[in-house]
Length: 159
Image 1 (tube, rainbow, N blue to C red):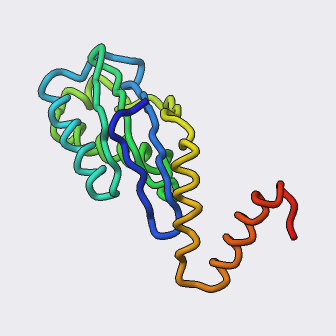
Image 2: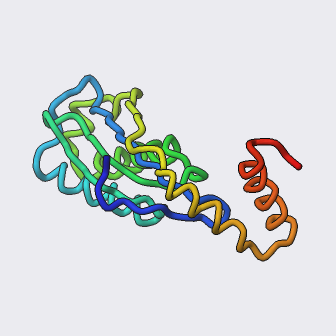
């Protein structure tokens, strides 16, 4: 569980989507020296800022693998973010560090591991979310949520 992580909203959805992501250099070659790692972290941080993605952790191990823990809007999508990170970083790193062009046919392996991290919202969080929906400015939304809550009060039966 990630401590001190807060729910966010994109206007229509309240979410808490935290992912662990791992990808490696092509053939897991040990090409990520200190200088490349520093630049890679800068690139990933820049991409995350541009796309409103929170980087919780960046860890680069074995001089070949990148591990990220990120929180992002589900409508943006984790696959889109990772694709963006891999393609842009490959382009920049191979341009700035010539040895990466000569040691690798491409920068990154095509594979990526993506797993979710976190927990289900507590009952208190769910109740708070539902109660806040009742304050919607749209009358139809107010009625929808009222019916939904009333169904629980009536033992799961409408009416």
